[in-house]
Image 1: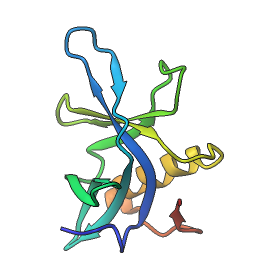
Image 2 (image 1 turned 180 degrees about the vertical axis):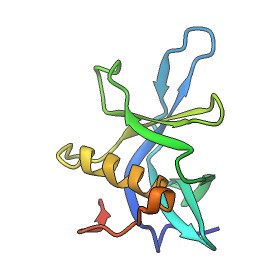
Image 3 (image 1 turned 90 degrees about the vertical axis):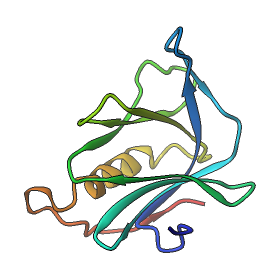
Length: 132
């Protein structure tokens, strides 16, 4: 799949990994890029290593099956969780954008894309988000 060039939404974010014994989420220092794009009618949620330019995660999201939300328990940074409704899978990301002003817009647009096609919703936005 893809490089993110035709992304419907993209933002700089690193991955976080949960310690299975303590449930503590620890950030990975790798510079990353999360992007979402549609390919052949399927919504892809991808994470790309910005140093190697390698796509390391490419998940297909079905309408309404996941939600991207802020982790309020994190007081030291801006951590997001992609939580799946059909399983217990949770993926964590930390925002690497210098400016936090658009964090809420990123969440709103990501969730609108995830829910696209459900209840007649469309993915048309008043503005496209590409954060550099």
